[in-house]
Amino acid sequence: MRHRRFVPLLGIVAVVASSCASDPGATVPSACPKGDFLAAVERYVPGSTFIDTPWEPAPDTDLKAALDAGGVACTYGIQEAEVGTTILWAPSAAAVESRRAVWQADGQERVDVPGADEAWALRESTGTERHLWALNLLVDGAWIQVNATFLSDLDEAQPLVDAAIGELRG
Image 1 (tube, helix red, strand yellow):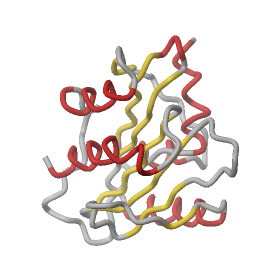
Image 2: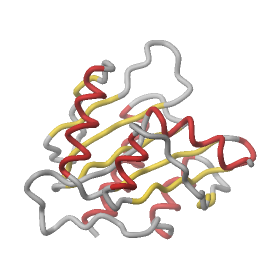
Image 3: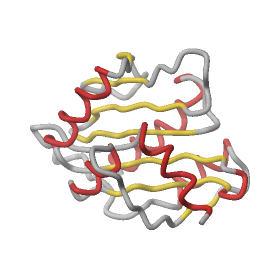
């Protein structure tokens, strides 16, 4: 099945969860957003669609933590070309803290996300091998993880990150 090609992508990346003190202004999506968010993806990959994926997360992965916490995992792109992005949103302080420790142990680097006013942000650092770009951030009491096969740095990713944050801030 073609949709399973995105599962390895999620093994290294993807989640969103809330902080210990939830922010009443932030609302984690209960379903995968389309509209404005899909339009943001299409600016990078014309012809992108929402890819409805029946997730089967492996234990001890970001995907499993996000879904177990009541979050959503959303993939957009061109499935046949294996080009796309996966975003996870999940409201759980416990999930975010346990996963954050794993990311830091794996060498993810702290970064500042312009305009996000985030509590923290970590970027996947894979050296010179760039087949997947990932960012985890805690903003407005929610943890967002952005993953993409078509991005190489935070500057390039900023409009997509802004769109993911926009889904929280409504």
